[in-house]
Image 1: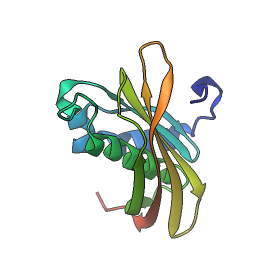
Image 2: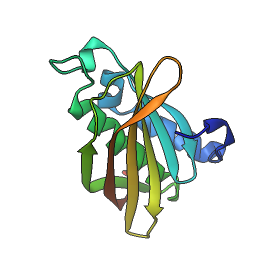
Image 3: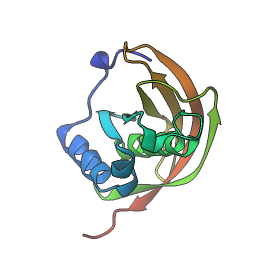
Image 4: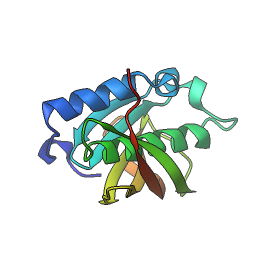
Length: 152
């Protein structure tokens, strides 16, 4: 994991659009996840480790790990699209590399190849300890499709 203080921030309008969309996701709210970085083509989501998101051995459940990875990639793609566009996941593949343990998980979605129709993102999830040290617990790749933003 690199130092987030050196990362470029998206424009205020893009940050507001991404945050507003994220805030409307029932699953992210249910899990207790929150955005910690919104940059051009890059988004970080943190999920605090708590009993409600664990599996039977006490690790964060693969479903919760995958969900924050999917959302991080989707919002990374959204940062590069105009305000009339939205994204939907077409497919994603995730490898669970180690038990998802730590004080919290941090998912990082990074756009690898932006496109007018399809965008490809790298997905990384780290288990982060209270001292700030982290371990890669999952990685993957995702394809998203641009869609017209629904009328409000």
